[in-house]
Image (cartoon, rainbow, N blue to C red):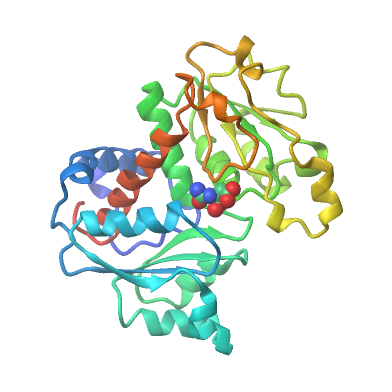
Length: 312
Ligand code: NCD
């Protein structure tokens, strides 16, 4: 039996990226790659299966791409995008919501403002939970699509020099991505203002695995990196608006910023962007954030197919 066939995804929760080995992540990326043709022309691989998307926080890409991924694989979707219209408004707790929805669906994509929400839901749920964002903590499926994007755009992940820029404290995508990247042989620059430095627990978990530099100055490293991963300052997660005002607009990537960058640098962003990447950058060959959006569909198709057992 090959190593790969021993990997088990059917029925598994995707709550945190640390639950996955490099071998498992590579396998998810390969399966996702095999979904590219189905993303274009559709499939009935998940016919009869139902995805419930429970979004207690705003979302455009994550929710719509999970739902589109399910529809492209022949399944159906139910759910809500605004907790205000669900019984949560009447005071229902998360556990009861999960215990109810598990009767209606085969898998749940959950986005919730509280850290630990996806883990808690997975403890209660009889059906698999896909963490679509748990507060400022984690966003594992975004990290998988980011890794997929690196593999697709650069042909490999090992050997890359990668900078994560912006809000490394409250941005959940960079937490999951940093954990995921620590399984590869990469060099990581963490560029943020002092008040938005990468969470200490993430640093502790990754510092013995990869080389890390923390700095506030993007100019210092821009000419050396292969990947610039830009993030939004997470205004809604600041406890104090005065603290947000101090860092608002602190990094803005424009054509001037890119003057000394490598020609084959790629710029990624989980989106939505506010003002951290100027519109003039969109037409440069380095801008890949809209290609990254497409990759979200194929990776979520790969995850649904694996967790629901349509592929092994
Ligand atoms: C991100 C999120 O929700 O964490 N968006 C996404 O899922 N693509 C990033 C953000 O909101 O800044």
